[in-house]
Image 1 (tube, rainbow, N blue to C red):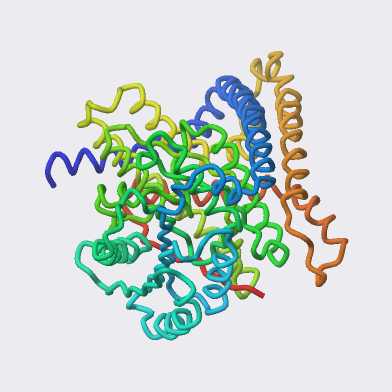
Image 2: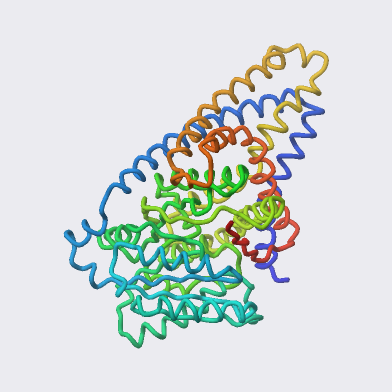
Length: 494
């Protein structure tokens, strides 16, 4: 192992070291110095309250932009405002593994419902050789049914067991991207005139999404130096899913909405769009990692020495909540999905080593993005445990003179009041949940709306079991070098 590899390995251990240092320190000091820990927990809860208020401000701002964007006829605005839209092509990558035909068919139908000319669409259905028989059967049907409706309908099959690759979505679309580049080169379409959208196979774009995306692209001062991040709604099967799945889905949506309101700190997430020029410049998606959706932003950020950003698109795309054949399988799959997202911690050593050698990126910007990455992963893993599980631990060990101090006597009331104040945020989110729901299917009674509100009492449990623990799992695995492979979330609809 050379010195650079050792350095990278040590950097991989930093998030886990901070995580377990916090937990072990809280336990040890609760016994030996409980007063110190009481101070720490109160300060942490104050910080958490500040973050909740901060989050709500940006969430409501993002929500207002979201609702405003839904009222715009983006295609009408685009066609009246800028004739250059006719030069733009949309290149869609739809990677799939073993998903059923219904899911693929529904996605392609949703694309066809877009308020846009299908003659400007190049659709790529990208399959895996390890599921070749299943994929080719579906791909043949889809190409026959939908191929004539688009400018191009391309089917690719990513070979299995390629040296240096991880069996992952990134490897699949890397292969598909290089194949499609050859096709585009024969068509002589300028790379700057192609907008790439990378969608999960269950992604159903809003009918106005591509018009809004094109409008943003044509009005951006440097359209090839930015990615475009839509609002992600998990509405496809939200009425059929159970409470833990819905809480995780809405939590992700509201987190993303608050991030869209602060584009200076945005990374790309899940389904998103970018210019084909930037994609070619960075050599397509990295094919040996799990978190390719956010890594592609960092690839561009480094390629252009910090002159790259993410532009919010407040028109949504709709995806599935986690749902398997049984309730237990759904819970296991949700845990694994959250752990895979938390594996984004793999970006930290990558960022430190690359940022260290790129002095063309302003130092302030390098520090800012490193802080966003490290602090976000640390808080994800530790905050729910510290607030709901370890918060009262030092009070049980406070004996003698310590227990008689004013702080120790009042700490339970202080902590309780701080947590009660954060409930305001939960109430606001619960209200937004009701507004964000799609129309209730006739197969569900009106009483289910009560469950949609009542489900939020489960928030502390889901935050610990299905958010914090998967993040702890991911960071602990990284600490010990037990690297996570790519896991495909099962897509099952009732």
